[in-house]
Length: 501
Image 1 (cartoon, rainbow, N blue to C red):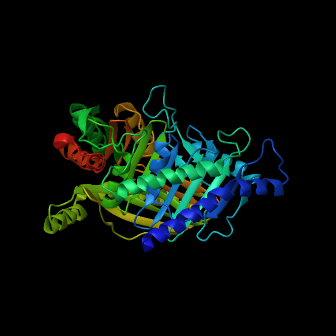
Image 2: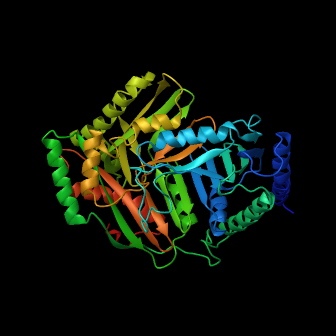
C-alpha cells in the first residue's frame, strides 16, 4: 500500500465516521431543545470533514437525480456545494430581495443549530440560488420554469471549503418544508460519498469525467447553432435604434442581450465543462445550478456585492476588446481599450451610477481614479473595483436590491433602459444577468452577476451574451463582441461548429 493509499483510507474512514454520526447528532440536538417527534424548526449541524473535490460532489448529486448547486472560486480556494432542498424561499416581483431576506430571518429565528461556533473560517447553513433579472415568473414550458423568478435554497447537505478547512452542514427543514424529514440522512450522505469517489476515480483515469444523469459515459461533441434571438438583422436594427436614442440624449446607455440555441450530437458533459471553466477562468466564479433535467452554469467575472458586516465590495465592469493572438497584440488591444472614448464612456456610466446609488448609504467609499484591464480568456474589459463601509449593517440582499441591475447589464437611466430591453430584446432573460450566489445565516454573503453562462438540457444548450450600447456603437462591432462573449461557454461545452455565432 502506498502513502497515497494510506491517506485515502484514512479519509474514507473519517468520512464514514461523519456519516454514522449525522442522524445521532441531529437527534441529540432536537432532544436537547425539547423537540420530541412531530414538526420541528429548522435544524442543522455543522461538522468538519475531509476535503471533497467540489465538481465531483456536484456531479455525483446530478447523477443521483438530486437538486444540486456549485459555487467555485478556483483562485481563492473557496467552494460551496449544495445538495437537496431542506427549505427555500421563492419570491418574485420587484420586492423579491426584501421578501427573501425577511423569510430567511424568520426561519432562522427559531432554528436549532450546532457546530457553527467552532468553525473558523465561518460555515453553517447558507442559501444558494438566484434572484432573476426582472423577477417575473416564467410561464409554463419556458426555459426558466424550473428556476422560477427567484429561488434561494437551503440544501440538505452543504459542503463549504475555504482554503484548508472543509465543513459539512446537514439541515432538516422546518414543518412544511420540502425536505423536512429526519432519518437516514447519514446513509444518504454515505451514498453521495461513494458516488463522488467513483467519479473521482474516472477523472484520475482515462474515462469521461461525468456520468450525466444516467449510467452511460458521456463525451461532448461540437455545438451546432439552432438560431437565436434577436437574429442578425434585428440586432443591427436595435443597436442603431439604441445608439440613436443615446445620441439624442434620451439615455446614457442601454444593454442589448441575445440568446443563441445550440445542439450537440451527444448529451453535453456538464462536469467536463465545469472543469474546463475552472482551469481556463480561475479568476472568475464558476457556478452551476441543476433543477430537474436543466442546468444553468457559467463563469462570471463580475461581482454585484459582497458584505461582511458593514464592509462591502462591488465592481464596475464595462468596455470590451478581444484578446490578442500574442503578447504584443494583446498589449496593443489593451492600450486601445484604455484609450477608446467609446469604451471609456460606457465604463464611466457604470462607475458614476454605482457611486450615485451607494452615496446615500455609505460611510466611506474607495475606488481608483482610472479603470484597469481585466483580462479573461477570450475578451478583456475595463474594470474599477469599489469597496467601502456602509452607514449601517443592512445585509447582502438590501445592498443588492439597491444595486441591481447595474448599467453594466441594464442601462442608465435604469427605468428607461429596462423599458427598452423589455420592448425590443425579444426574450425573457430569466436568471441571465441577474444576481446569483449565497447568503449566510448572519445576512452576509456574495452575489455575482450571472454572465458568460448558459442553460443545458441533455444535448441542447442556450447561451447568453450582452453588449452595452452608447452613441458611437456600431452593430457589426457589437455583434463581434457578443460572439467573443459566447465563446467562453461555447468552447467549454464542446466547441462551436464553424464558430459561426
